[in-house]
Image (cartoon, rainbow, N blue to C red; front, top):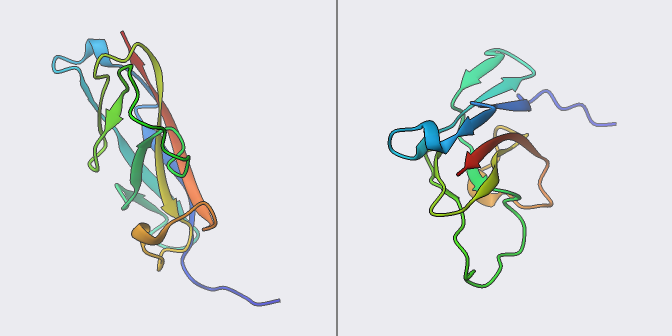
Amino acid sequence: MMMNNARQLMSLTVMPAAADAQKSPTGQVQFTATGSFNMAPMSVMSPVVHWSIGNPFATPMPMAMSPSASIDGNGVAQCNGFVGIATIEATAPADTSASITRMSAMTRNVTGIAQMICP
């Protein structure tokens, strides 16, 4: 059994855990992620993450006819006419030496989830 002494991301917490986009004056919600690690520093606010609405590795659907919520690379989400609850996901590789751009469904990843209510 190989021992891995590398720093590992153990969990991601996304804040706010739930947000109502209608209560934001701009209709946009800023989400942030905090990573918990297996060695010091144990907690890092805003580690590099991939932001997505739903599963970041799902097969993209053709251009939808109905509106859909979106989130940018900085964690700013908006409803774009979508009505319902959007699942916000922050995903990063567990191995901190791995590049976020090389993540895939086959990579050991850590995900944090929040919800945005769209009016």
